[in-house]
Length: 185
Image (cartoon, rainbow, N blue to C red):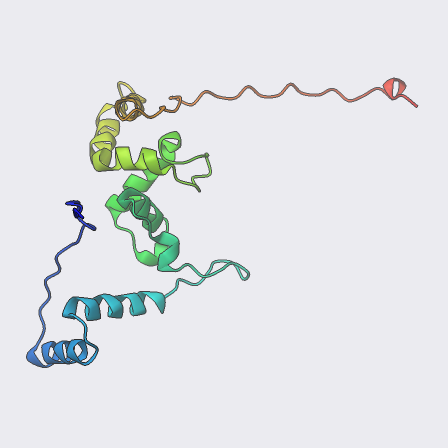
């Protein structure tokens, strides 16, 4: 049977400095458990992350864990992390989040910026800094240029681009109070 040539997943390289004793301890644990050093490190990180929830803001809300933030989409993860002050977001992360909230139809299902639209984020995130710079540089001449460029990027990916700029919904007409004589009894 032919094996698939596709890779199982993308991995990252991590280089750390260890003193000889710590390196020995790592190798000891790996051999003792019949694991690779990588597996020992991965499981230690998983254990540490699982035992470090962020306390919920409300008394009856559940704590926030890494599972609440994790997503296979890098853009989704980054936007979720930038919202949590306890994770100390950088200025750049906060700036990207503010841009995404301002241009919410390209990232979120509603103005409340709660639920992300993963396919849109996947297409736009690799170019987020380009769109952000376009917005910063061009807002005096064309405030909506970054949104127009994002619409084009989504169309090129065969996705239905959201309406931009967002049309203001007409205000419902003011109702007039009923005259007592109009009430059917």
